[in-house]
Length: 349
Image (cartoon, rainbow, N blue to C red; front, side, top):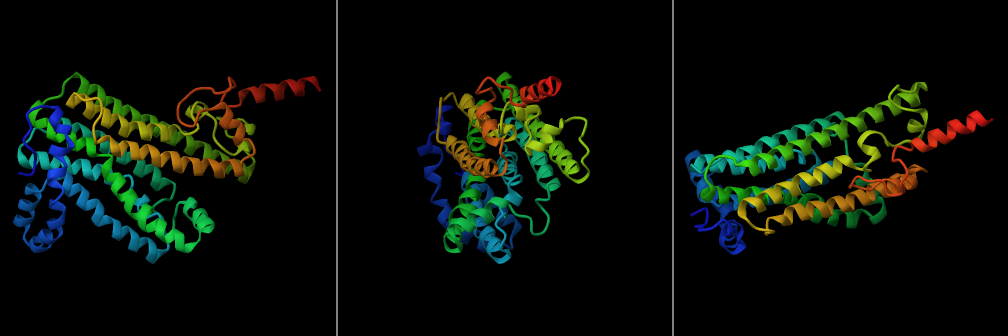
């Protein structure tokens, strides 16, 4: 059987029952795929007879060397970045497809896929409009890191982290969807009140991230226009544009509101699986935890570079939390107090 026999909701997240018995399938799967590659019916039967979590893991491992070769051949290390907004939804779609194909209850999985599709649309659009899919486009942090650690160590970093760990990570954030899939055999079809709250909450978090993205986009466009023509957009003060980084809207309450929402999304999906399986925690949380750890590291590097580039960024860090909204120093995060003091100084002169 490709899914375990379970008798309780707690069993649905028991690693020894739902994961470890199926991991040996990974060893034979490549050969089985190769043997049936020209047989569509054989591939379908193989797909249905393979544990869906194992299939997802296998796909993420299969993609890793592809990302590595593409990165090294093109000397461009944002290959995973181009698929970042697509892969989690691909895996969520895989679980939903498996449920539909095997006759399992699907409404909860369809709800996950619906929110995940919105998440992909928002992130893909934002990445596209910033030029992420343009030929030669690359995350500026990779070039800086390569300069600091050298080509040899950076190649090791590419093999281990950029191409491999990140690929597996984008699969692991959907571990809770596998837990929901297994649980559906006991809970049946239909959505209860908690399902609706979680699914709508996830959509709400996607909307928060989209609003933060748009506010950043508006600010950056206004800043570029100000640099070219000297014109100050009506939504901003000159001091805001001279500062060089956005402190308006959601950015007055969180230094990275889009990142905060992004992390909250996958933590919420994990929490949803905990509620459904009546557990306080379980193994599927490793994906969300790894995602949080990644954002801690990448945001630290981003802020280090920003503090070197913008003189007032250190003051911004004192005023506003990195992710969690709140005024750390009691001073407004949009620096409105400095505008007021500046006006008072002008009047006194």
